Figure 1 (tube, rainbow over the protein chains, first blue to last red):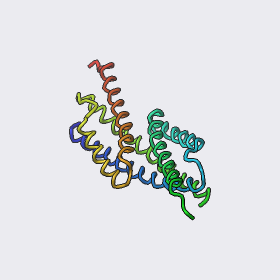
Figure 2: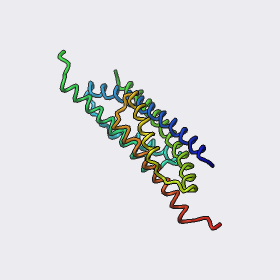
Figure 3: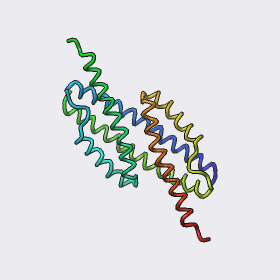
Figure 4: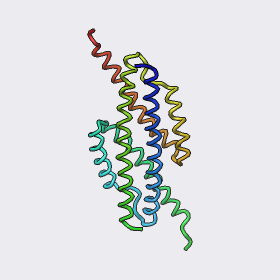
Length: 101
Length: 101
């Protein structure tokens, strides 16, 4: 085991991080569309039932892969909070600049 | 635009989340090996220079994809904190149960 091995692991980690950023960017593109749809249809930004199902499903998946439930909860929490804040911003934009027609 | 569209977006989001959990699990497998290597070689669990480079590189990538720098910082912070706590646990196990040979 050598410094080269460490460098190789770090390259693998950096590749994973890049993939995660790509997935996150795609995820926020989709949730932006969801946010616009919700604002147009008067649907509240937060859907606690949906959140509960999401968290439960991913906790199952995390358990299979050996990820800590506590870690996964924190991980999802910051993503969901960001999405909800985007949804609120979209809704408030709609209120501030209503379509004149 | 209909409820079906919302269901379709949610399926896409769930697929992304599953992929992210898979990537995270793989990432922690690699960092576990890094942690063991660090413990065996007396290398400290935290490497502030490496962290700075990681964050800077991902911030660049995030900017390209439109992700908020602030969100990405929080996202990375919980991952790095989890890794460092794993590394500390590995190191402490080594101290608590030293190889009798």
